Image (tube, rainbow, N blue to C red; front, side):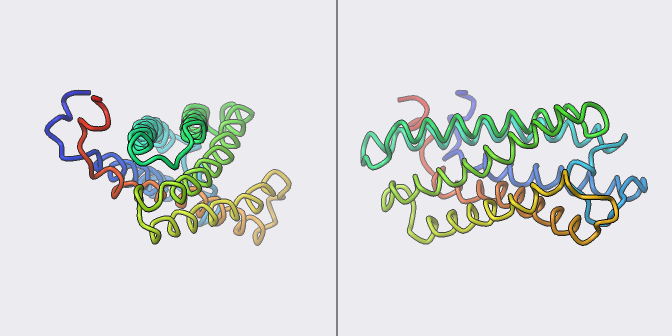
Length: 225
C-alpha cells in the first residue's frame, strides 16, 4: 500500500466509491431502458442488471464497488483505531464489530453482482438480504461511533447527518421486505417498494461521502504506525 505515500490523505476512497457505485446504477439503468428490458419505469435495482448486456456491466462494476467499499471501511476502521489510541471514546469491540458487519454487506453485494436475478435467484436474494441488513446495521453502528468519538472524530453536524442517513436507510427496509409478497399487478405497492430500495441503497452509498472529513489525515499516521 506504499504507493499512496505521496497522498495527503485517503479522502479519494469515499469519493471514488460514491461516484463509481452511482455510475453503476445509472449506466445499467440507461442500457436496460434502451434495450426495453424494464417492466417498470422505476424497477428494483436488481432488475436493471438482470439481462445482458447490462447484466455484464452491472456485475463487473458492482464487484469493483464492493472492493472499493471494503477498502473504505478498512481505512475508516484504522482511522478510529488510531483516534482511540489518542483520544479514546470508541470501544475497540464496537469498531471491530462495525468493520466486520460492513465486510458482510460487501460480500452480499458480490453475491448480488455475480448471481443475477434470472440465474440463481435463491443466492441472489440471500446476497441482497445480507447486503441490506448488514449495510443498514453498519450505518447505524457508525452513527453511534461518531457520537462516541465527538468532538475528536467529527463535528456534531456530521454526526447528525450520518444519523439522518442511517434513519432513512432503516425506515426503507420494511417497504422493501414486502417485495416477495407482491403480485405483478400491484403497481402502487411495487412503486413504494422500489422507491424504498433506491432510497436505502443511496443512503448507504452517500453515507460514505461523510468520511471525506475523517480521511483528510496523513496516510502514514494511520497505516504505517
